[in-house]
Amino acid sequence: MTKIAKILAVFVAVGSLAFAGFAIVTTFSGPDWREMIREPYFQHYSITSGGAPDYIWTASRISDGAQIASSKRLPEVLVKVMDDILQRQQAELNELNDRETQLQARVETLTKAKAEDETALAAYEKVQRDRLAAVRKQNEQVAAEVIAATEEAQRIEDEIVLRREDVIALRRQLDEIRADQYRLEVVQKNLESLLIQLEGDNWRADLREQGLKKQVP
Image (cartoon, rainbow, N blue to C red):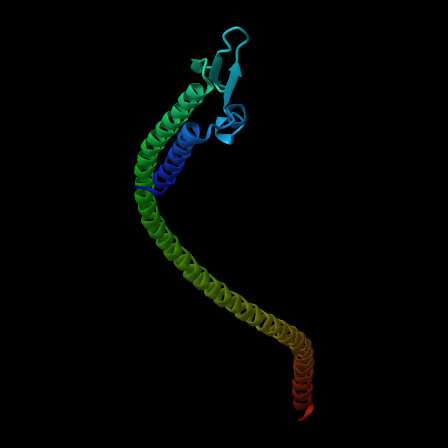
C-alpha cells in the first residue's frame, strides 16, 4: 500500500470510529441531535426540518443538492448522512488508488526517460567538450601562426629598411661615380685638346726643322 493509500485508509478508519462513537452515543446517552448537526463532519450537508404537522427531517449534499435522507426521526437521517460520508470517502480512496497507480506508471516512465535523457545529455556534453577542446587547440595553433607571421613580417620590414638604406648608399655611390665620370670626361677633353695642341706644335717644329735643313749649304 502506498503512502497516500495509507493516509486515506487511516482517514476512513477514523471516520468509521467516529461513526461508531456516534452510534454508541445514539444508543446509550441520548445526545442533543440538533447540536450534533453542527459537528464538522456534517459541514458539507444541509440538514433541515420541515414544518408542521409532519416535521420531516431532510438531508442533502451542498455540493450537488442531491437528497441523502428524509425521515421524521433525525437520528435516522444523521446515520444515512454518515453512511454517505463513508461511501464518498471510500470512493475517493478508490479513485486516488487508481490515480496513484497511473501516476506511479507515469513516474516510472518519466524516470526511465530521465535516465535516457541523462545518458544522451552526458554523451552530448562529451561531444561538445571534445569540440571545445579541439577549437581551443585550433585557436592556439592559429595564435601561434599569427605570432610567427607577425614576427616574419617584422623581420621582412626590418630587412626592407636595411635594403632601403643599402639602396640609398648605392645611389649615393652612383652619384659619386657619375660625378667622377663627368670629371674624367672633362679631363679627357682637356687632354685631347692638349694633345691636339702638342701635335700642332710638333708639326710646326718639324716644318721649322725642315726649313733649317734647307738653309744649310
